Image 1 (cartoon, helix red, strand yellow):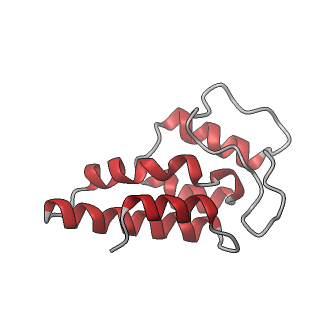
Image 2 (cartoon, rainbow, N blue to C red):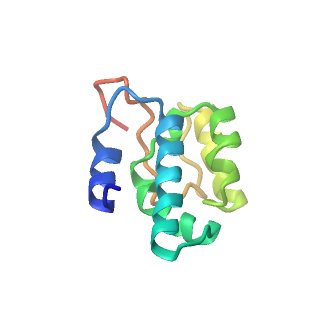
Length: 118
């Protein structure tokens, strides 16, 4: 299994992959990493491992439904943060809400785009 530094590099540099797919792959890797380390499935430990990927995942490039059905249900964010992310997804021209998590990627373009500006 690839180590965390390799996975972080992939999360940062990968192109031409839907963000929700990348998110699911990173969650699966996190689950397997916890299983490898602890020899048990532990949802809290999985989220602790997954947290290192949060700055590289373009949640704002997801649809509201993708976010709500995926990362919005995983316990990564509190309710105010989830609402702030959803508001930002649904109103891409508006300012980021005050409750927007500071460690979340602000890139709105999907990975199919060559312009990675915020």
